[in-house]
Length: 218
Image (cartoon, rainbow, N blue to C red):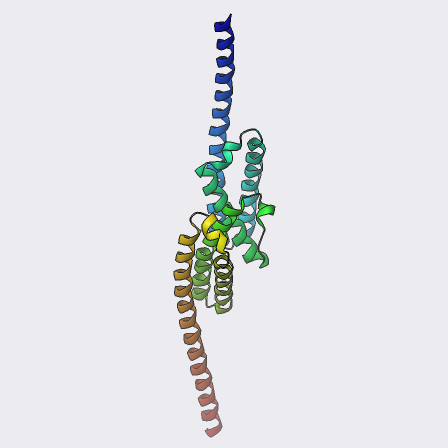
């Protein structure tokens, strides 16, 4: 009788384990999809395909909502490395899109991500803004490049001012060290282009002045 009871207990445990494993596999598949959608959305932002970026992030957001629903009964899902990577990439993509389209930061509460994932994703936005700045310089759009640099500096200043975050958010210090170098390099690139553009405009004005002077003489 006791053996039968134990078998029944173990059978129920096995069923629960199989159910948990099924949920785990499904959630990992969803998080890989979130990671992929977020990376593609970032690419679309740089290509100025904002409608496509928005659509991809909406799909990613639905998958996140699904995960949060599953996590009510399977809290361990929220602490896997894949979830962290996906939520960071999703945060990065959403923040970047919001800054480029509306010039505003979106909150972690609206995204449904953890504070640490949001902070780490925000730190990575600095690298994407450098890319936007360089793309703008190549197009001759110095104003957008300068604005991108300003936002990069704002993010960096605010993150480094969070003393507690350095101890509580693993990986933030390293990301900020990288961000510092990125900002310094970008500042140099923008400064060089501003000076070059200024010199080019000065030469152009001088040429126009000389041409007008020659016209008066003739």
